[in-house]
Image 1 (cartoon, helix red, strand yellow):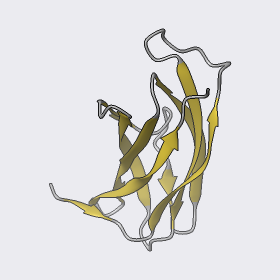
Image 2 (cartoon, helix red, strand yellow):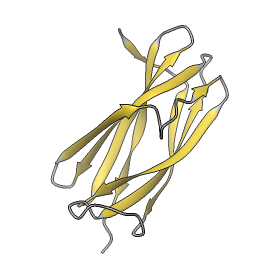
Image 3 (cartoon, one colour):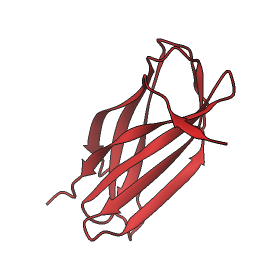
Image 4 (cartoon, helix red, strand yellow):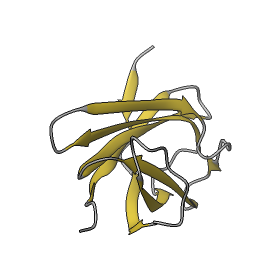
Length: 124
């Protein structure tokens, strides 16, 4: 099945915040919350089925995170609708994150849209 970029399905990174109060494992002790909005400005109704993140640290090491839905949901966006949510990444070094959402139109076309790259800088 071919997955196509869907013009009009737009992702914005609304905020990125360092969160020292979040639990994080010892090998990745720095937590960053991110706030995202997915806007459907296309003429198609789209259900977000999954996501893929690539988190790259300052030494070039990558962690790839893939999964179903978005924060446990499968948002269905009719034209003009948007879906906002927040989640977080935990890191050990300065890192960047980027990725994509994979969706399905009501007509059965698999589509994607890119998640813009954002930076997470370890404090200190």
